[in-house]
Length: 368
Image 1 (tube, helix red, strand yellow):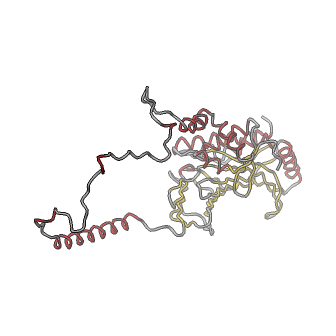
Image 2 (cartoon, rainbow, N blue to C red; image 1 turned 180 degrees about the vertical axis):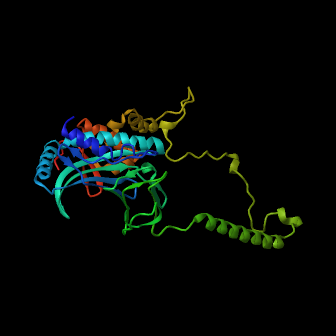
Image 3 (cartoon, rainbow, N blue to C red; image 1 turned 45 degrees about the vertical axis):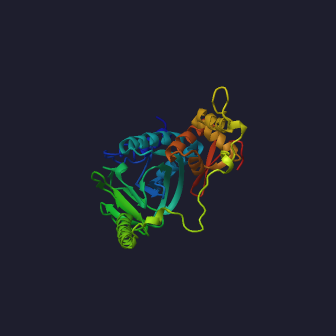
């Protein structure tokens, strides 16, 4: 097993086995003479329930042998980035698929990245950092974000820290277990710690959550019913007794004479109905006219594969568009769009890049 395989296996084990119902230990980063001193996990949840995960292995460069070993690993990662990224993505997809099956929520892995760098934290440190987007990580319902079931039973060793962050505009409704400290929009836990079933759990609500509408609607309907009852009572007290002449027409009112001169009125013809939709005198069938022509595009769309539909939509929009827009246009889930785009990217038919917090798709020959 070569060095890049050892690295990606070690990193993937951070989450493989930490899926629903399974406990996970966190092995150190061991590639030859390089061994991690600490591990930092962070999940930054977004409003749509996706989360950007980062996993950092930190190595204290406190002697020449460790420094040289890390520099060698750094060069290997820089020279074989796509291979490191591909192996890690494969293992993360397996992990996320396990979580998807357990929760019944559509999930996917996107935008996998890897880098090796140095940082002067408290002394010189070498850092191997992996990142990926976990689509569908949190459960979203109305003004609520909830997560934790995909990490249930997770184990943090003494050198590992897990932090969950959330977007602006949300406040904490529930955190289990109690975190080691509380940030403005984050909660961290430091090992050694083994989470219980259903933990770690974080439930968030929007800062200005709307009041519950059920009771208000009930009160409004009750009030409306009371007003209607009172109105009918008053109208019943004013109803006149029918007289003998009530059926006679009022003075000055001309009685309805019906069609004049014995002629029947001509039947009205619906606007926009012409010869194209007139019944066939021999068969009684209505010609399809414009309707059949209008349905040709729908039929053609149904016959396209998911990959062809994405390519067709991308071409119609000038060869570049946001992945979120593709999801909305095709009325798909984010996970399904991610899966189809991933297949197209593997086949070299599309490329994607980050623009702020958005994924943008483009054709390979479209230069940035």
